[in-house]
Image (cartoon, rainbow, N blue to C red; front, side):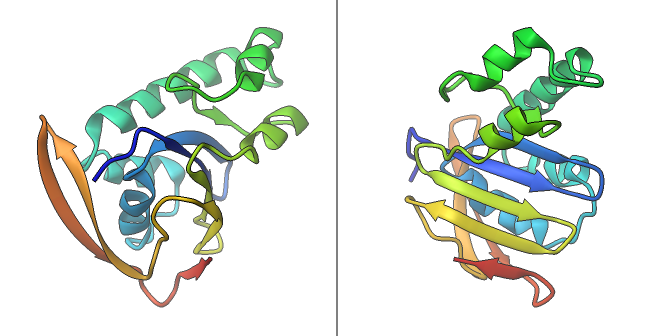
Length: 161
């Protein structure tokens, strides 16, 4: 079952924090691949692309564009983009200053979830859709066809409600 809303997701690794919008099925997908113990946001997203290629490719393209224009500081044009209210086209971005940090803490329609790869911790700051559990099942679409997956988060990971 899919919902038209979205989550604000923050991915933290040793190098950076990425903030992005995720469809309703995104948190379970990211939980499933987080349990595989990737050390980088890039590898985590790449693994998740196997379940939702279009979403992850869009996030990767948005991050590439962000990186192109925001090398040492937030470009003024990008500041207005980042500060805009969330919509289906709000871009993913890196947390690089107080403006992007504050924006990364604004929840999406369905909530705010933080995946901390460094600490192996998932924090459900607010989850108004489908609470993440240590074990679960999820669904996603491939070429209009529904697929299912199951996951089990290893004991090395903590899950905070």
